[in-house]
Structure formats: structure tokens, C-alpha cells
Image (cartoon, rainbow, N blue to C red; front, side, top):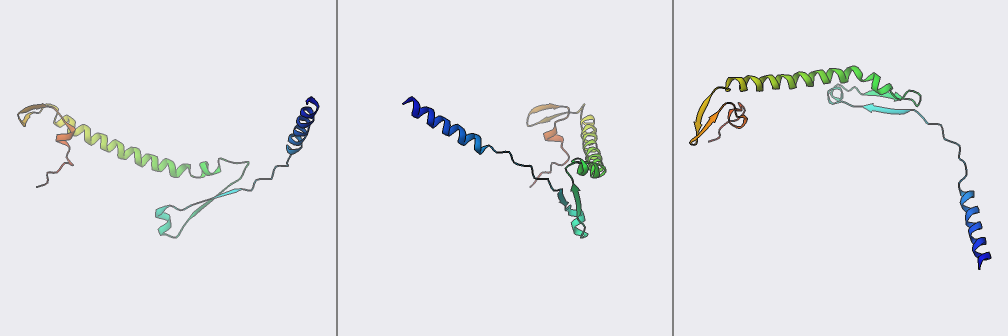
Length: 120
């Protein structure tokens, strides 16, 4: 019984070791990224970036200026919204009013939001 078990285990070990053969790595081809932005698609222009294996950050460095510009626009828009909210808050800061028999003191976004429009 032990001889059969040892024989089966040795055959299994040889099979497993022979199946783990070393393979040569295939050289990687450069990756091509085609960027089709909505504004550039209307003009019929598409951007193509080729990223090679030795320079993986090429796409990042080529698009850095555009990303910085978009981040700046986004930050300015958010700052404008915050300044607008601050101006409303400071205008209503000392206002006291009675709404539905309840005293409301100061700025309440639900009540004082200028985008709120009453529908009849």
C-alpha cells in the first residue's frame, strides 16, 4: 500500500514540476490611447497618445497642462459658489422673522436660497 502511495505521489510531483516550465516573456508593444473629447470631436480632431513601456508617465506629462487648466476652472467655480453663499449668509445673519408661527433667526439655506422659486 505504501509503495503504491509513494509511486502515485512521485508521479504527481513529476507531473506538477514538468508543467511549471519557464516561458520567455513576450516583449510588450506600446499602448495607444485615443482621446476624443467632446469639444475636439466637433472640430473633427482626436488626440492620440503612445505610451511605451519604458516611459509609463508620458500620458500624464502630456495632459498635465490641460488637467491643470480644468482644475483651475473648477476651483474658481467652487470659490464663486462659496462666495455667493457667504454673501447670502452674511446678508441674512441678523434677520429675525416669524414663519408659520415660528421664530427664525439668521440664515437658513432651505428658506433663503435664491434659487428657490415658489410655484403656484
